[in-house]
Amino acid sequence: MAEKKRKRHGEESNGWPSKRVATEQPSAEVIKVSFVPDEDEWTPVVASTPGLSFPSHLPLKPYTKRRKSNTTSTGKSPVTNSEHLLHTSAHPSIDYTGQEEVGGGTEGLLSHYIGVYDPRSGDLQLMRARKLVLRGSPRSSPTELEQEAKGANDRSARTALGLAFGTKKSKRALQNLTKNAISPSKKGLPAAEGSQPTLDPVAAAVISSMAIAAPSREDLQAAIDEAKPRPTPNTAAEAPMDVYPIDQLVGPGILRQLAVKDWQDAVEQKEEILTKSRFVSHRIQQIVSEGDVRRIKTLKYLLLLIEWHTMLLPGPKGKGRRIPDRAQLHNKLGKWGGELVDSVGRRFADNGDNTNNNNGKMTLNSWHLDNLITHICALCITVDPENYLTDMYDIREDLKLDNKSVRKYFKEIGCRIVAPTDKERARWGLAKAEAASHHVAKLRLPLEFPKMKVVRQPKGRR
Image 1 (cartoon, rainbow, N blue to C red):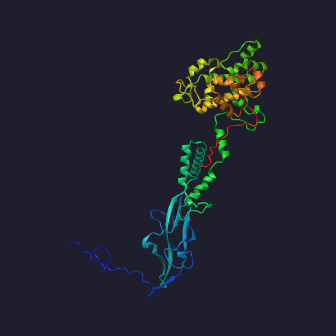
Image 2 (image 1 turned 60 degrees about the vertical axis):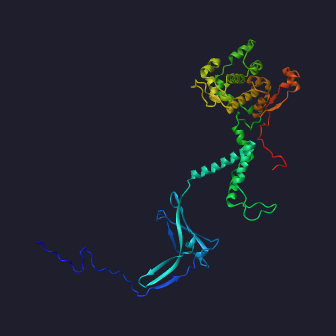
Image 3 (image 1 turned 90 degrees about the vertical axis):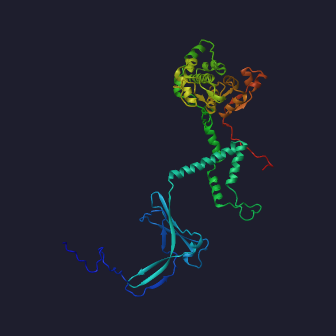
């Protein structure tokens, strides 16, 4: 028979002592409570972090400011007259901000206190504390800030371009959008006559940012000139010959591939040279006779561009032009060599290269077609023996353009359009009635380019 274990005195069956352990009692029998007045604006803080795990090692920098209105409490206590804020940016990606959040109802009448108790002396000091709520917000990266600034500048530039060149309907829509976005404050009485309406802070900030980001008229004109489909002019040129250098219009690599020995031999033997261009045929004898090989090669490259332009087909839905397939181009322009023909497509076509295209899908949209024609016009004004002036009639017939279009293209490269003088009519053998259909493009300094049009509102309309 097993011997029954005797219980220890004062021990229950579960192993715990039956008597409760007495907690430490204060040495003093009486607790003295005192209140520390909040005479200093820097007081203790009770901070909560709802839904947030705040790292304890981050330092918080305190700030204080005077309250705008004291509606939650009465008196002249620093706690009620000032407002505290805690902030830190020590975290790599999050900013932490602690501020007072006063809710509605009886919460605004609630005060918080902190007590400091000394068990030896039995003194308990109470002092008023501030209740702050600590919240975190992700910090914007420099890339995001740059993208936001760039987006604002792009929107401002598009709005300015729309107001300058848009249709009446689009301008009205932009104006209404601005009016609806920025409206004067309607609080109080209307502004007195001659005074400016008062804007709310958001509207004032938007207006100031628009004033800073809006491009000037000169900036808009420079951006438009840079994007135009034309060869880049040398605006610092001191002579017309330096405005459009031949190396820029043709290219040194192309000049080396152009052979002009056949033209030189034909002119030397006084044989007639027939081409598919009125402009080239009327000037080839004089240019070749002068013996300037560089100028002869420039004229031959101009002929290549004119013949390549003649090969273009109508584009889809009547927009732009379509380039024939490579085999057809080489068949019709085989005398030029495949590399020269392909180089024109690589330079002026919409998608750049037609060497691997056999389906006839290469196209020239309106911009690329205008770029090709303005290069042809610049070559005409450069290679013409008349010293940087040319009769536009021949090139107009070669490109099958109307009088208005050919004038526009020559103006885009900085030429002035005038009627032929009596000496020019006599030199070209034009009768007075025949000269009415001929106009002369002259490249003179300073250059004159078409300017941005400004639509002025008629007087009396609002």
